[in-house]
Amino acid sequence: MKEKKQYYLHTFGCQMNAHDSEKMAGILKGEGYERAGNPEEADLIIYNTCSIRQKAEQKFYSHLGRVNVIKRKRPDIKIVVAGCIAQQEGKNLFNGRPYLDALIGPRNISKLSSLLDSPFPVTALEENNIFESNKIAVERNGRVKALINIMYGCNNYCSYCIVPYTRGREKSRSLNKILSEATALAEDGYKEVTLLGQNVNSYRGECSFPELLKHLDKIPGLERIRFITSHPKDFNDELIDAVTETGKVCEHIHLPLQSGSSRILNLMNRKYTYSEYLDKVNRLCKSIPHLSITTDIITGFPSETSDDHQATVKALKEIEFDGIFAFKYSPRPNTAASAMNTQVDEDIKSERLAEILAVQDVITEAKNKELQGKTVELLIEESGGSVCIGRTRTNKIVTISSYKKPLIEGTVLNAEITRSLKHSLEGSVL
Ligand code: 5AD
Ligand code: SF4
Figure 1: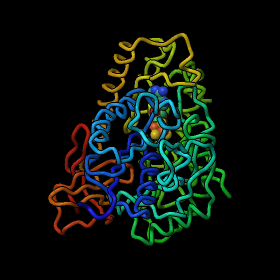
Figure 2: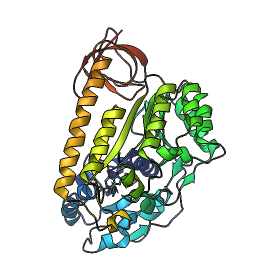
Figure 3: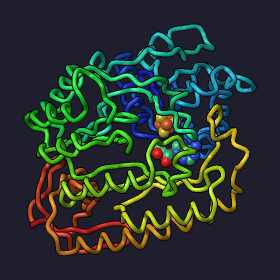
Figure 4: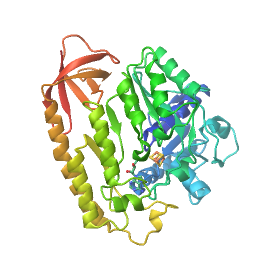
């Protein structure tokens, strides 16, 4: 019999969710819980869910059979659904699932301990009750890199996207809270911070986002600063200047394009045309040498024609991204695009996705090859046993194949790229 109560926490979805789970783990640690290795051993099971696409939802639903079995054997355990599906579905989730005990939305995480003390079933799905992580020790997943919220929610209402409905309206966190969290992380030995927001360029705390980067750049001990995600409509020259002027902000930008067709971009409510996007990318590349750019692409958005799709293929070839995340369009509840009567066949979405991925594969491989023989700066992220992994400032993972001295996690060093494979790089420490 274990002395402490055990929790099992399974996270789906984005970095925002990963960080929310770190906060929940911090709260549970404060309540005297320990992390369990599997759900069968736990007194409390939490699923932190994602509803961005139907496939992400299905992953969660496919776990429920197992928890139902566990609960039948041990009726005293508690099962909580957190995150975006909890917020989206609300109490409907309880229908036909008597084994679920509690629902907690992304804006209510701070209520986790009081929720667990309430009579079940119980929900915490209210709006605008943002958790402030300076109040509770966050139980972080690593010791080298850390996630920091700079804002919550989203006001953009891209017509395909569920996030404004699950994470609510945009709210910036105060500059002081962000700076004190980053300073404490640096004092604890963290070398890299990633600033999180659905649309970081619209940060409106006591300063603008470019100014925030300049403040963070001054924190002693931090080596690298990253941020996700940027919206192309708000990406301006002030930000480009901030990236060039700050030594710690890495030369990598994730700038979701979504489609190369301006007609589709308009239907997506993205508020930029392809040529405006291209113009920003050109300005970025001119000002920031060795910049790496990654993007998100959606295939088969309602009414997408073969010509629209080919415009996306052309965009990939023209811009030559370092990497892409591509997805089939998935209709989401409440969104404007799900109500459009021009939905594209699933087969066509799949064909287009395959073509997009094949086109990008050739580009990624060529870009990796260009790096062969080059010297890059690596932050060592893992150095367990015989495997050692570092990351370039441009966000590429390098497996270290040869080194003279043992490498310590958190060290920054130079390495030569000795081999480039289709999806990975190998390096040797100089
Ligand atoms: N269907 C497919 N992809 C989507 N994304 C967001 N909503 C949907 C959807 N309904 C993608 C976008 C976004 C990324 C996080 O997920 O490309 O940038
Ligand atoms: Fe993250 Fe969006 Fe998924 Fe919510 S729906 S977890 S915000 S990706």
